[in-house]
Length: 332
Image (cartoon, rainbow, N blue to C red; front, side, top):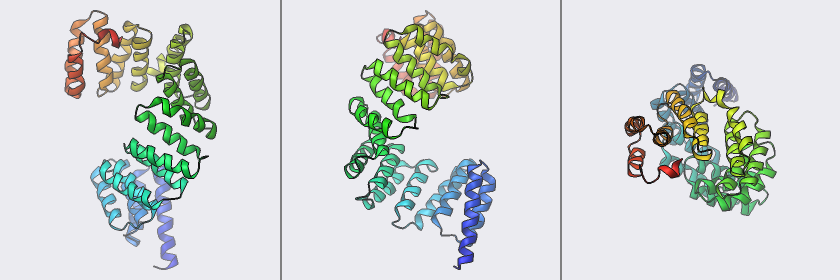
C-alpha cells in the first residue's frame, strides 16, 4: 500500500469517526465502508463499522464486523481492548470480550496505566473480581494512579464491599478533581456503611462538580434525611418533582425516597406509577409500588401490579409473593 493510499484510508476513517461523534450513523457507515474497500483488513476500520452499525440499530451487522476484526487482530493491546469492548457493547458477548481483555492484560505486565485501563474495561463488561485484581496490580506499579483507585473503589462497590471501597474513592476524589463520579461513589460507600453525615458531604462535592445530575441530589437528600435534616432533604426532593415527570429513573429514585426513607407511601405511589408509564420495563418500580399500595390499604392495585411484574420479571415477582406479608414493613 502506498503512502497516498494509506492516507486516503486515514482520511475516510477520520471523517467516518467524526460523523459518528456527531450522531450521523448512516453517513459514518458510508465513509467507513469506503475505507474498507481500500483496506479490508484494517482492524480499527472494521471496529468503526461495528460501532456505526450498532448506533444504526443493525446489531447483526455490528456483530459480523467485530468477528471480521477479530480475524486480523494482532497482539496489539489497543486492538485487543477495542475488539473486547466491541464484543461486549455491540455483540452482547461478555465471555468473548473477557477473553480478549485478559489476553491484553497478560501483555500489559509492568505498565500501570494500561493495566488500569484494562481493569476499568473488565468492570464495564461485568467482571468485578478480575477488575479489582487488575486495579490492585496497576496501583502496585503506580501507587499515585487516581484512575486505578477509582476503578478499584468501583469494583469493591460492585462486590458490595463498601468498607474497602472508601479509602480508594477518597484518593480518587482528590486525584481527579473535575470528575463527579469519585465523590458520588464515595458518598454511596459511606451511605451504605451508615456514615451519613460524611456521605452527605461527599454527595455535596459531587453536586458541585456535576450540578445537573439529579440522581446525586436524590442521594444527598437520602443522606441528609438519615442525619435528621428531614426538612432539608424533603425540600431537595420536592424541587425535583417536575424533572421526574419526564425521567423514569429519577421518578423511581424519588418514589423510593418517599417510601423507604421518608415513610410516605402515598407520595411514592404517583411517582412509581409515572415511572412505569414512562418505562414499562422498570421492574424495580413495580416491586416497590406493590408494597406502597399495600401500606395504603389498596390490595386490589397491589395484586394487579404483581401480575404486571410477573410478565416482565418472574423472579422478582416470585420474591414479592414469597415475602408479601413478612417484609412489607421493611420495604416501607
